[in-house]
Image (cartoon, rainbow, N blue to C red; front, top):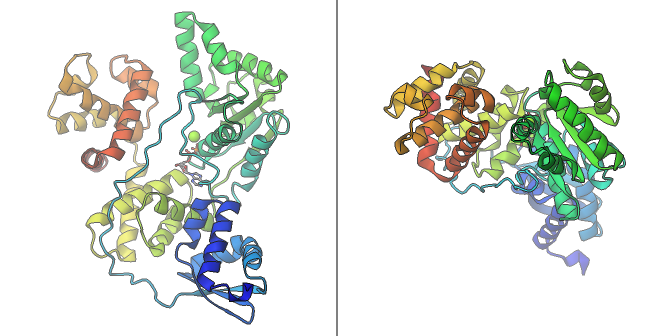
Length: 449
Ligand code: ADP
Ligand code: MG
C-alpha cells in the first residue's frame, strides 16, 4: 500500500509533519516552490527554484527532511535536489502589489510584549545559534539553568527579537501561571523617575519584582544612571533569590558598559553571557525570504540575493532595504539587477546620513503648511495633532532621537506622549496606505533635501 502512495499526497504529508517539527513559517519560506518530481530507484527528486534554495535545503534541512520523507515513503533511500529549468525572467517582472493586508500586532499591556516576535520567525544561523539555544534553554528551565541570561551584540542584530520571543514563548507555554514582564531600560528608567515624582514606588516595585520572568532590554542604557542602577540591583537580588528568571540585553558585554556599579556588572556576568554577531550571507538571505513572505511582497529570489549581498551588518537595515525595494518596485517596470543595486545604494545613502531634528521639523511644517513653532509650542488645536505626531514619529525613525529628547524638543512634552504618538503613527501606516505614502514623501524630502 505504502508504495502506491501517490507522490503528491505523500509530499503533502511530509510538509504537514515538517511544519510541526520545524515551524510553519520556516517551511512555507523554503518549501513553497519545491515540487516533487518522482521517486527513482529509491531517490526522491525534488525540483527547487534556484541554487540558493538548493544550498539551504541541502545544508540545513536535509537530515530532517530525509528522516520525515522516509517515514512517509518507507522505501526511500535519499533525496536529490534539482534546480528548475524555468529560470526566472530577470527583466520582465510584473508590478508588485504592496500588500495592504498586514497583520497588526498589539503590545500586551500585562507583559509589554509584542506578539510579532517569536522563535518561529527567528531565523537561526551560525551568528546566533548559541544565543537561540540559550533562549530556548531559559524557556525550558525557568530560573534554573542560565540565570541571568545576558545577550549582547550590535544594533539591529536581533536582540530585542530574541528577548521578546523568550517572553512570548513562556506566555504560550505556561499561559497565565508565569508572570512575564518585558521592559526596555529606557522604560524602566522613565517609570522609575515618574514613580519618584509621584511617590508610588510600591506600584513600581510590584510591577518589576512580582514577576516570574523579568526581561530587560538594552541595559547599556543604565550607564551613568545611578538611581536606576540601584533600583535594578535590588530588583535583581529579590528576583534572583526567589529563583525567578532574568534576561538582559546590551549592545556590549557587561565589562564594557561605562559608568556602571561594579556590583551590578558582576550580577550581569553571574549567569550566561552570550553574543550575537552579524549574520552570514546564507542567513541574511534566509531572513529576507521569511520577511518577503510575511509581508507578501513576492519579490523573486534574485532580488533578495542582491539585497543580501549588499547589506551585511545589520538586520534592521536588511529589512529596511527589503521594504524600500518592494515599495519602489511598485512603480518600476523592469527590475533589472542594475536597478535593484541602484535602489539599495539609494536606500543606504538615506540611512547613513544623520539628519538634524531642525530639518525634520522644518520639512514636516512645510508639508502640512503650518508654522514650525506650531509643532513645538503647546497650542491646542485639533489640526495640529496629526502633524505633531508625524513629526515625533520622524524624529524617532530618521532622527534617531530618544523619546525623552523628542519630548524636550517639543516643549517638554512627556516621553509617554511621544511614545504613544510614535506607536500610533506606526500602526496607522500599516492600516492606511495614504498615510504610508505621506510618510514616504516626507522621508524622501528629509533625506534628499
Ligand atoms: P536589536 O535589538 O539587536 O537592535 P532587533 O531585535 O530589533 O535588533 O532586530 C531588528 C530587526 O531584525 C527586527 O525586525 C527583527 O525582527 C529582525 N531580526 C533580527 N534577527 C532576526 C532573525 N534571526 N530572524 C528574523 N528576523 C530577525
Ligand atoms: Mg533592541
